[in-house]
Amino acid sequence: MSEMMLETVEDATVESEFELCPKFEKTFSILGKKWNGLIIDVLLEDGPQRFKNLARRIPKCSDRVLVVRLKELEANGIVSRVTHCDSALIEYRLTDKGADLKQVMATVHNWSDKWYSPAESC
Image 1 (tube, rainbow, N blue to C red):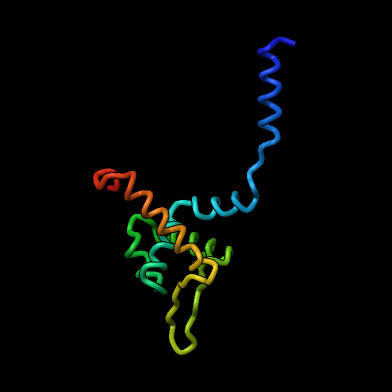
Image 2 (spheres, rainbow, N blue to C red):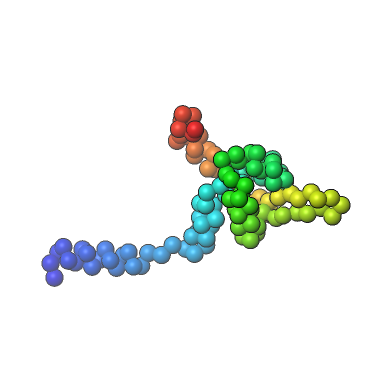
């Protein structure tokens, strides 16, 4: 077999052996979805929020998309929707699982502060 063909076979073998950890893939499918990181960050910074306050804090996210993202985060056990019996007040708050992302988000903030200038953040 020629040397070039051997390298191609070896490369194909290495590629077929590589597999992302399903837990890692699941995590990034949640955190990598547009607006999820910002929703989590707002809830980490400001605590429980009403929908209108979240929408105000993330103005570029449409209300429709914000509803969808909150439902997805709720389905994944990161956010809980709390209805108060004595009023029509509904709040969104982080679960323990969501609050556990605090260090992850702090690390992302540190990385972005290091690698992006203020002009790039707009």
